Amino acid sequence: MSKLITLEEFIIERQHDFPFATGELSRLLSAIALASKVVNREVNKAGLVDITGAAGEENVQGEEQQKLDVYADDVFRIALEAQGEVCGIASEEQEDYVQFNSDLNSDSKYVVMIDPLDGSSNIDVNVSIGTIFSIYRRVSDANGPVQLEDFLQKGDQQVAAGYVLYGSSAMLVYTTGNGVNGFTLDPSIGSFYLSHPNTQIPKSGKIYSVNQGNFHTFPQGVKDYISWCQESDKESNRPYSARYIGSLVADFHRNMLKGGIYMYPSTAKAPNGKLRLLYECNPLAFLAEQAGGTATNGKQRIMELQPTELHQRVPLFIGSSEMVAKAESFGVVNN
Ligand code: AHM
Ligand code: MG
Image (cartoon, rainbow, N blue to C red; front, side, top):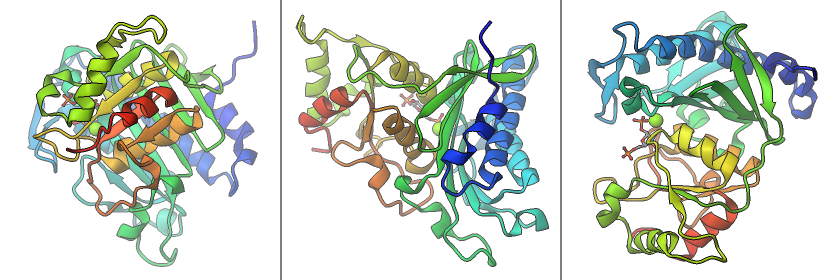
């Protein structure tokens, strides 16, 4: 039997790859892994206990919140605060960022951006959901309170990012800027094991993922690209297959392993697309690029966009580099 490598062993082994390595980032990642196991346990129980269903509140974007969203948000916040390496977090589920005030956190160097449970419309129907996280070094004075500017950094400033996929297996996939590595949870032992070392997105693929129900309100270039994906052409393996789970983490993960493009363009209802730059697009863009793929808003790299607000939305085209370039060539930004 080849040697199994646990996530914790791997994080420590790779610590020296990280430019500011002092063990803090390693501990931070371990706290995220621990919280994700707790959330995974609840996700797995969701069909058994009466935990699913709307919590009766709307989140800051006016969307209905599910109970597990609230639960996951609490679990990650509590784990990150208790662990002490983080001075504040911003969550898709909270209107404003949260500052951690305890002695443990007062001089911490990191802030975390998190979408605690993405794809929440899939909780009730036993379909994969995910957590997405993004880690930055704070830029404000370490002796004062954490500031909005600590959270409004370009994606290029991320020091680590990753996701947890609660699927047929739970997986944690992350990068610290030295490639992408994936770990699969052995639920009987409660450990993540390295299962997808140095993951690379194929340069091209046969899958396009988009909510085609919005077709009529997409920019003309997106419509033209989709029609092109559906045309027959032996040489370029078309028609492509359409695969859309409606859970970004699951769609992204599949495309990363098999090759493909995921798109959430602007629509009539959502002129800037639906997805959030800080909680969803930047972390996945960092992973995509680290795996050899691309992430753009249709004309510019996601990670070079300057955020102006916490819950900013942006169109997203992400996945295999040749496919994203092809989509862009159709002029997929707003008419
Ligand atoms: P959420 O953060 O409210 O769960 O929304 C994000 C999700 C993504 O996971 C998914 O790709 C997309 O929204 C699906 O949206 P739509 O139903 O409009 O296609
Ligand atoms: Mg989300």
